[in-house]
Image (cartoon, rainbow, N blue to C red):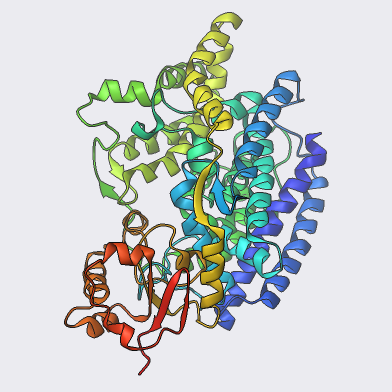
Length: 555
């Protein structure tokens, strides 16, 4: 089964990656993403995907996990049910509203919709940040560009989001199974701490990261397939790895989708090549990956001018007033016991592959307990996820030392909190969370059609403003989004207040925040009740039940 599916999986990942990277490159060269460029990108992606699939089919890339048994099929079925429920409910139109099933997506999905429609609507490339003025978008935009390409090619936004999520879930399921059979599938799907997810740092990885942090839709399946191939290339001799150029393609495209994943995987590649003294096996992959990876990193970091990602914050994982032991127990339950058991078993058996996965994982985890990668320390979990996956091979060795009954009982106890969280999210009777009103957003989008998407519009900075959901640039977006991306919005927010209140100096304030237009609707009227609204001296360029749009440059 695996030998038949793997070429298709690698072909899909390579094809999507190349299509997206090519379209980004063409958009940078031409100035904007267009349907023609999206078509060219897809054509290139299909070509490379077919070639990659055929190359994989010619090598002995049988699954390291062995032949699938009933436990594997059971784990795959559970994984498929949960993934289907989450992604089929990702973007649902019902009773005039768009809803999303996962509460973690409630705040994040509107920002991604903004990016997708902004790119598809003709934003200049490399794009500025559509939710903050005069700043370059320092974000791995790959998966949102992919959905923007689908939108330009006539695939509705909701369908593109759902289809991408479902296909990515199937690819992740295969990659997890190749990494560690049914155990890896369930350990990932049912991960998480004990208690209310809102009070935990270590949340369920599938719900809180894979479903919501969209770069992982590409980075997780591609990264796991790379790790499994590199394990064959450097650590074991259990079958052939993926062809070097296929590895290089997946690896070199990662920065555009998820920079942190690329950095950690690159660290492992170098460490494994050096530790096993198999450098000759590394040069071809490294040489081919170097150019696309370098270009991707340069684009995402604005030529390495992005702010440092690392800051010192020991104890960030602790709850308010909690002791270290209580916080670790609530978040990780008995996972540390399994890690210790796995380390002991791997050391006793001198299992080089397991030790070279476990050692780097624990070292990175140790650093992440004392440092943060972004202003929001919870973003550390984006790397902790990889550390968790890297410990699973050693844990599997440790579990082999336990009697069957004890093994089953301990694993069940470990995964029980995650099982409860996943079951609650899957069987949730609330039927989703409303993101926006369809009629309002459609009307606003129609009104904004003559306005270039890069023209800044002053409006209330909420996470799901209809202007942003139409893909148009705001003077300032939701403060939580800006803060989590390392942007300090205080000065812009102060000038926006002056503008929207219409007091002395409001026209200069508009120039300061690059506001060409001003949107005045129910949100703005509620937020700035005492506004003098001097811009109303000019006729609105568009109006409707949603409010009015004013051109601040009109005389």
